[in-house]
Length: 144
Image (cartoon, rainbow, N blue to C red):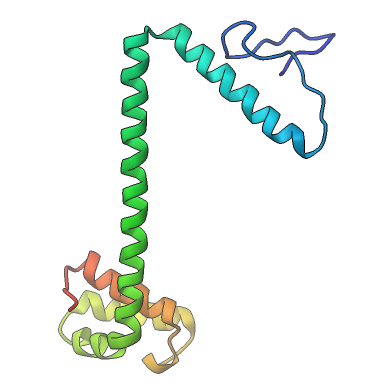
């Protein structure tokens, strides 16, 4: 894809696995481009590895992809957990732990100052979540 009639630039794929150029033809070109790249990657990978190594690599890549998906789902669940807790008990939680832990107190003050507010009632939900998440993840303060 990087070469033209004046420059023979080559590419990182195995030789002759992708065309020198493609003609842009609107939306159809997007799927064609992706298909060409996938074909080039597959051909290069198969050439570099034996069938056994390729299958092993493929299994490892699929496993790694599944692990990434699980981590993303866990992040979403954690965000939802903090949001629900913040909506229901955020104010009481912050009030309860404010005087018990100096680091927590400093974080609350930092957030309030950054938002330009003097009290918790003026705090936005996202900032309340930030404070609760800090308490749980950094200070190991449990939430119900």
